[in-house]
Amino acid sequence: MCLGLPMRIVELTSEGAGIAEMDGLRQEVDLSLIEDPAPGVFVIVHAGFAIERLDTAEAEARIRLFEDLAASTPEAPPPA
Image (cartoon, one colour):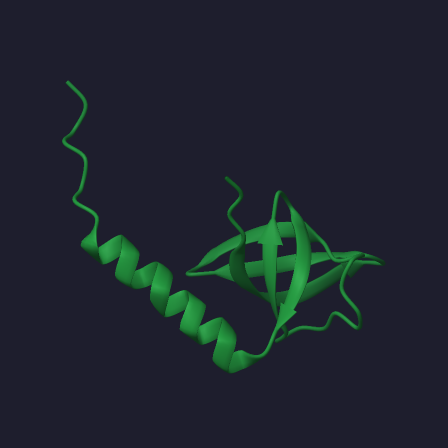
């Protein structure tokens, strides 16, 4: 199963690369598959690659979905 996370580009670091952020977590991502990457643009990130550009409404809907999923998942007990 593959999982892509909605993240917002916060910085372009070099041609074809940048930093994306979700919920305070920042990750370097390859932006070479996205047309016109720019800070503020939402993308789907999978395995370090931005693979799809999202409009703001769709990105926010997907982020809420992840938040709802996390809230409904019971926490694991602490390790023994």
